Figure 1 (cartoon, rainbow, N blue to C red):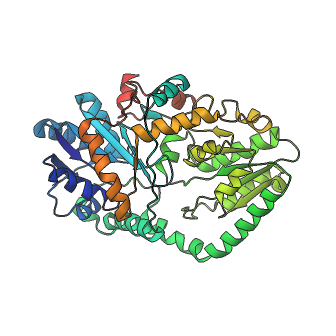
Figure 2 (figure 1 turned 45 degrees about the vertical axis):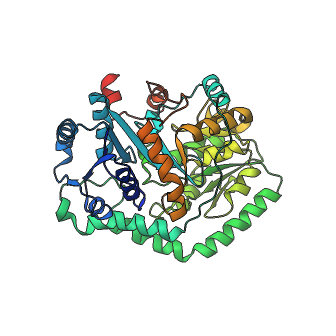
Figure 3 (figure 1 turned 90 degrees about the vertical axis):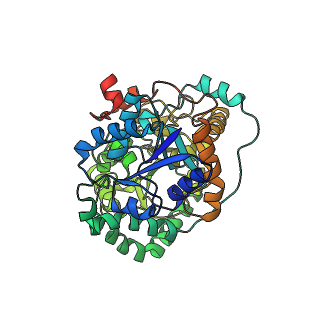
Length: 432
């Protein structure tokens, strides 16, 4: 057994996982693809790939064969280098594992065999989910491991600024970010400066909505730079989703219904979503029916909502666990028959289908036991809890355990239906 670690999460998590594994005598190799990779794993001993992305497949294929790699681990499966690594792992019939922030929030980490989103191997059949969950013993692990926004922001900024400021060390490295760091991060400053005002105003709106009698639907906005939006949603730009949702709402809503867009708490404000949403509502001649908030208690907003519309945000799973009807527009792991509404968007407004609460509970239980690891990336206690279980699952081949692995990703067909293109370098594109 020999593990190869590619790009890691921008925190101490990846570094500590490797050290933990080596302390157990597990052979681990590392390939750095950028100066940030190099800096976060300094002193661990690694190979540096400084070639072009076009040469990466041949390099990685040769490296895996030469070093006799049995398992590849990477953070964020749709980064260009990791996407290719997944395809090669299928070609060479070795294991590959992707990890990310948890589907269950907060205090969970996702660890899946292969890939996520449309490529996830997690079951989507309600019957299978119920049967597998029924076999599980014991309760989900508890515990809360808080961390500060500063810890997350500092690591995120450092990881992306370092390669941008010193590109000559890995001059062919291709960023996966939608915006250049020199544009992305400074754009947060105005939003941070007005944060207190925005929060106060948003919370007042939430109080008014939840105390009123008019039914409302919630649309939690995601971030344009999120790869879940760019690769797993079927829209070229989030503004297309805004137009589709408002247009459908105007056509099909009841006279007293309202539509509430909530800006993502980490949005960088480059797209100016409040302006885009209001102008779109004005174009559809329904400005009095559309509300935009930047802040406020999402849980309270959900509690009184008639329904929630998402692309693939984990907020959708939160809503399902609260018993709120959810319509998914993209591809999401929790878009399961009897859980999410399978009607068209136009039909959803008039008669949103409520989730089967027992199925949701079974889904979450199976999710936690198979592809979710308790803990987090940023706090010392969160890493201390997560790393032993994270490593155990890798070493024992227990990722997607409990029967929660299907050989063929069951969500690919829906991905094609909603307009998500399978990348040319994807194993599943070649196999289709």
